[in-house]
Length: 144
Image 1 (cartoon, rainbow, N blue to C red):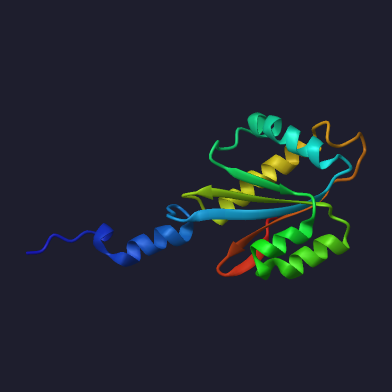
Image 2: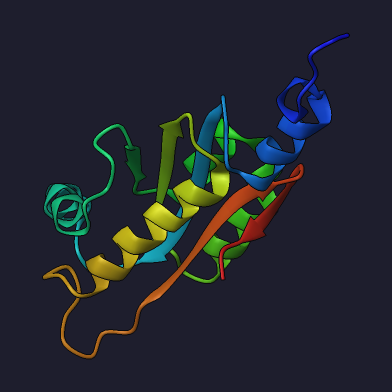
């Protein structure tokens, strides 16, 4: 008689991985946003914002003042970069986190953007414009 359990079935693990419950890769997300603050002001305030929203310390953030630089990272984002640029978005952030899903990284960066809007980076009544995107099943989707 052979001992057999669900955990020995590869379909069991595939289902868990597909659901995002487990991941062995690096989760990535990108955000494009507009802000009247300077690059240096944003970069300086990012650490305070991260502390306030308690992001994982291993979450890597790369701030870009030119959204076109994202095209050098992933050419598949070119249409999203073009839309961001054409709509006046000045900044982009690439976020990544080991052993995480793309969607969970998008959630983290969305939380950061939300807090950024309530920080000294935005003036009273200033309109927030920004989008978060991540890859899901080979396609880039926007976080809702």
